[in-house]
Length: 452
Image (cartoon, rainbow, N blue to C red; front, top):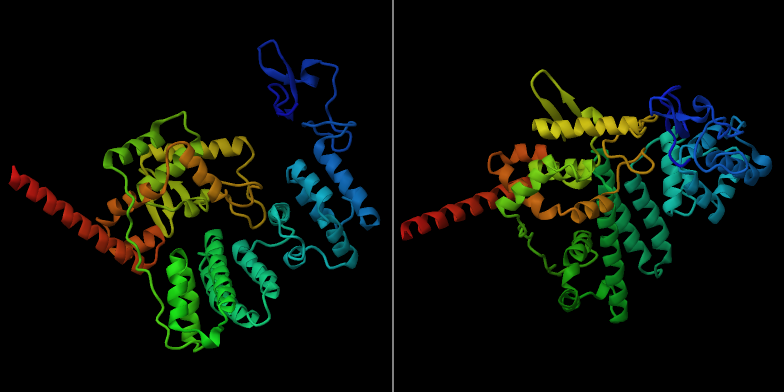
């Protein structure tokens, strides 16, 4: 009952309870079994029947009851909301409407005639369940798609600044709004602002807040900030140097502080690489080991072949993969890259699995993600994917560094910048590092040969 499937005879998705003369699984109607699993509300067969109704209809009925006199699924004003909620896991919706006041707030919005918008949903508690429901509304076309990482950064700034001491609020607000959020908007306009960038900006703001609080405890202020304060703070908290350095440099550029030398940590060159044999063995596993999950194999191969960050991989859509008479291609950033036949076959297999499972979803204005999350209107969570890769012995950092070195030796920095989606100056640093490492390697080989 938890796993309806296609009946071998009527070809409809129903609960399969027996087999026919050919040994194929069939539903109650085709098998002549006197059982009825059809929901008395929607008529569909599915898991979780209680009181003659499926889980989804029970949840929607509960929502109708909680809405009271505001309306029901038949109300034209509420139909988009009910359609969106019906597309989400019933358990998630049930938890959301029972444990939060979110439904009451939505009911008030409908009653007031304001409708359901991002701005109104922004007034709800921004927890995991609200994010899940918002994604369902986007998938159903109730609200338009937006850069959620950027929007959540702005919401977080609006929440955190009023909680600060009054003397710190103006400078933190200016730093957050006019420096970090402004740059984030510019990046989002280029399609490059991701959840990891949101987390990085929040860390910078937290570091600025912590520094000002420490300064107050030391009996000082921004106006009396001296070099000894900065040196003392950096000596005791060296791990925060880059994040705090951004804040101090911003204040200095706006003459809020003067005469301060901001300690700068040099950009560290990559230190973690894979042995060539280990790299080749992991790539072989990705391309040939059928015991690994299909998603893990594809993501692991893309990291090891093209040095693509996992955050970029989860944003790939099916329309980026195509074939011609001779090759299969994947568009990485703006470039169509020829894929090895084995990797192309894995992507085609993934496409078939998604479609057969009904997860190759693309709603109104929603991309057809190659690696969809839950709900499938958004890409898969990168933190969980990193964790899964590590679990299967395919960690990404050293593998990506090794792939980057292997590729950039043969590419001009400007080409590498376009291909890998990295800043031009970053590509130049990688190229210089690769050349230096290669020269050192050749010199060592030459010395070893002469020694023999």
